[in-house]
Length: 341
Length: 123
Image 1 (cartoon, helix red, strand yellow):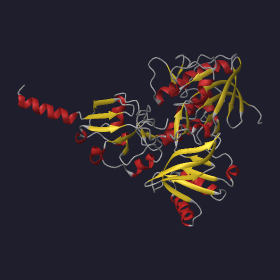
Image 2: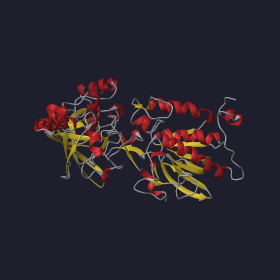
Image 3: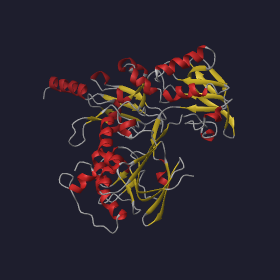
């Protein structure tokens, strides 16, 4: 068990709004840790539209999702935030006034004065294929991620998909597996050409199987797969499998937020528009995940919300101090924090 | 207004606002007017076709706006681009006539288009 990490604010979600919150908090000497389930920062900007232009960031006529993410990372550099990527927050528990204990699925524990939920549309989680009766097998013999390769040694494996995840795990697990079968809907792969070539070489050498089609049914007992039915262009085959690994990309799901005792309204979190605080003092919600009269799901709204949230968070982090509002254009103290004075 | 003008206006109207029919898997049918240049996805969202999710908002990066183009219309609509085909790899229930509706732009030729929605968009 790791030591508890103590900080001022834990920001859940490293999308544009979570990143900008670091800036607004930083100007007020508030330290932040960011946690994101993706393996990269930028949230939807990075995952859904990295190369697509955004036209409604004030003062920036045109910028791509990646461009905005990079610019925000540059802007928050002076505040040296700590990132915890590929981790999902599992619990947020109020243990003080205000003080929260935050835990992640990677086993980390944080003690933080405030929590800012900037989780956008929720967390990006693997798409689950619509195979009837798949649920009981999940996490027992159907896996959407590989945590420990050793667990697959000597087994009959079924990998499904045509992207880099499917190909990478095919190549990594094939030497360990008893027999590996890759299933994809068409005989073209969007993964890296080198991986595709390596996979095809294994198939040509008879060291693995490639089937063009889709998995239509599963057989097994008590969560343990025994076989899968694969429908190809002109046949239905039964393949013996011990484990299946489907890779169909990610989709946004609300995730564990609903279990933290926060008042929710149809998968959104109602907030006070003066502070962007939820019904729990010290627990804030900014960006697409919150709701209030007139809410617009725009990045610019999230930026505004992060600024107001930071003012309120200051009172929790420094209860004895008086906050004097300052401008970055004229305040030497702010400029020193930004490293420009 | 003369009959001739009426007919002309009607033709112009037809070209300006093609009709699209969405047949949802649960049997709900929506026949709606679409704006030229909009996408079949945007038109669905505007008209509350609930089985079109469009998580990414039309960037061809999520595959949650899948439709099966009616067989009779597929030749008019045409096949997916390679970029779109790659996203179709992450969709389910994909058929030879499946397309991502965010990648179909509404043109006058699509007046009367019929698309079917799948039972599952991945979420």
